[in-house]
Length: 144
Image (cartoon, rainbow, N blue to C red; front, side):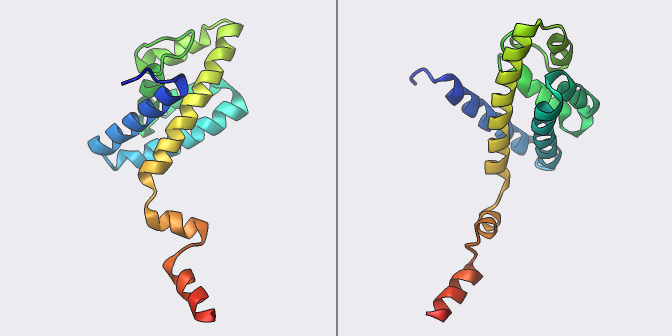
């Protein structure tokens, strides 16, 4: 297999992580989905340290899983560590590494969000969102 670009590796890791959650316990996927969406918003709104602090607080609701996935993402300045060590390590980063880590975590989170969307939404939900349900196709055909 050829070497993957960094973004391609993020995608592979994200889809593998989400697939593992679904294989282990489909019920925990709902909590994980909420946590990933909330984390992305908190990252934008409050910054990396605060967003990670929220994950610490939500350990039982998907926060621990997300911290584990972030820990395995080889974030600059953080490296590959245990998920429970991520918050403290991020808080100790100097400004330059904090900025790099924030950028990397944002990209990793975006791929996790895409993977969650792809693995959890059913075709019926996709059709309804795009306005292309079977009922609307039949209605259009009847007008012709």
